[in-house]
Length: 364
Ligand SMILES: Cc1cc2nc3c(=O)[nH]c(=O)nc-3n(C[C@H](O)[C@H](O)[C@H](O)COP(=O)(O)OP(=O)(O)OC[C@H]3O[C@@H](n4cnc5c(N)ncnc54)[C@H](O)[C@@H]3O)c2cc1C
Image (cartoon, rainbow, N blue to C red; front, side):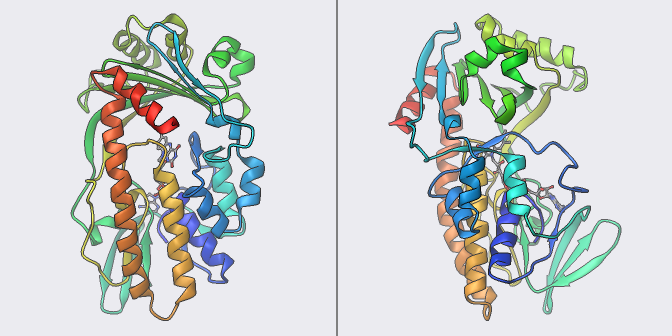
């Protein structure tokens, strides 16, 4: 297994449950090597199903935040246009912090931290995995769950991600209810979004009053070439100019953030597949990177859990199992890739009404 993200850990945890140990090679030096990221909503038929296969659904129910399903849409002048609140028993898409999900999946697993795979080379006797520093190791089956910029992918496909034309700049507010109670009320229990012309601002609450704010806009990939990314003041004033005229409380979400992270949104083609190669496969973002519209981690988890279950059920012929898995993954992921890429076009578009109409469709 290459990568200890949601996909890789799901494979390892489900195989572990069925009594099959697996090597997980992860480039991070440890679970706390970098901030784990924001919050994820896990859908009942996708991510939650994967956790059920791992035997982790009861623990997920304890950790997750059903109230995080709340969603509010504001106009650029601050008028509340929509305010959806989950029903008390609504468990369709509860939120969980990425760090909590990672720790839940890690549990008893042993990960080889600080193991950066540089390439994999299938041959007649299996697959050779090359690790930074010059080490090599041979495996029967290598699963590339190493995310958007996968190093395993080139063994199967020449395709690399391309820029969507939409960039996100992310900032965060800690302890919002104490330090910024006005913004805490603005964001509510879940997410708050504002859609303007070719711009969007989305704020999402994690646990412990941590809120992540995403400013999204259409721009060339090098829009910040003349900015020092570490110069928070310079990035902030560029963002405030881009969102000029929006309501003051909405812009306060950007004014009060300390640091800004630039995330250009890249995707793989919606129909990305490859000719099957014995001993190597991909899943999650490595196989089907799509816009971050609430599905990528769910798919990675379910694919990981399904592949592991199938391998555990029929260890005699893993190649046949992987082949069938790939066909199933391509069909499902292709459908979601189309939905999310079309969704991004509507959410960051010249017609803000298209974004609201999309939410009306999803909520109904
Ligand atoms: C802002 C944002 C919000 C999102 N919100 C949601 C959401 O609410 N719901 C949802 O379902 N999805 C969401 N997504 C998408 C989701 O984060 C990804 O689809 C998901 O993390 C993919 O999981 P993965 O395991 O395939 O890859 P990753 O999570 O990228 O994990 C890959 C792992 O591989 C490791 N790795 C990389 N290269 C190497 C290497 N060469 N050698 C060894 N290890 C390596 C990495 O360090 C990492 O640990 C969001 C994405 C973003 C950017």
